[in-house]
Image (cartoon, rainbow, N blue to C red; front, top):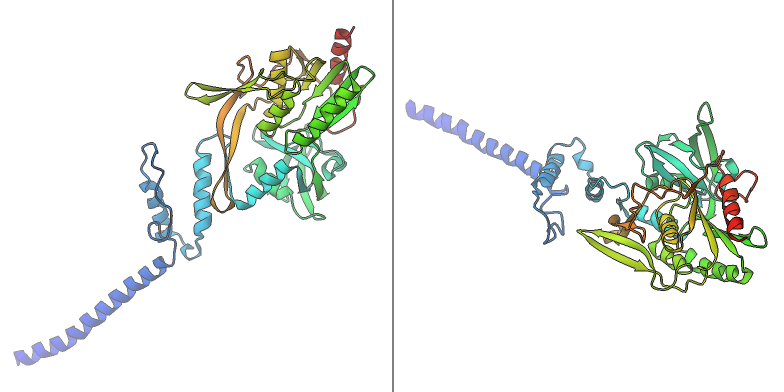
Length: 414
């Protein structure tokens, strides 16, 4: 009787054990299966070895976070490894808390290339971020932005109904740009208005001018440099020859609302005003190391009496030129305090079209004045009662800063 009961129990238990083992294997196999098709932090990631010279740090936090996402994120079946890695790289650069260092993926790298090439499709304005607000730094002449009536320092609150408070200038620029003939909607606020206004602006092909040159009268020339982008290398050589041909006795260099550009461009331009070998700027590389940048010459325009116009929109490379002319030639600066962007960014190409813009040093004027966060104080402070568009025709009746520059030069030329 007992043997019969044991046989029955064995007959029942053995199938149950087999079934249990099968179910356990099936569940674990399924779990392994979906994980195998997701980006594994160790098996699916290539080039995961860190640089050989790296300060102490525990990367397990990164990989543990990655594993939590793989294990628990509700939409783990839709994870995009490429976007996760780009996001991590972007966060790494953002951790520097440097507003001028930025990670660009392949699409935003294309935007940056267009910006520096001086040609793109958009509405035609320089933008920046100040005091937490995205602003119009300056509208370009004969562009949709200037025709629509946008002015320097207008605040851009929304782009196509998207709030701009958390956007970087480059992210905002990508939203504003688009195919030629399409429209972008901007919500704009100006301090003189009682409420914000909506602008529907049609995009056009934009060619950014580098400079403007003209004679104001028989003795005084006027040179406005809008930016230090790629086309300036060619256009300034031609303009320097025109200035020499016209033989002005005095020259007004207008750097108002000039956001900067290439270091090489400002050194090239500065070379026309400073003799070869003169210090154009000092570059603080950190750790007590300072590099001197000297004028390449020819310095053929350096004998002119000059005045430089600056304002709060004068930044970066334009501050370098203003500081170099004041320190070397005792050129007077007229206007309002400059922006104070005195750091050097290097564009480093990464794999697959990605790019990092990273701050590598800070600029000092030849006399050692630090530009970053300080700006340049004008020798003679003059404020305009109203903001004048950077690319508008000269208007001596309204431009008090230009009037003062003329007055100074006429006095020196007597």
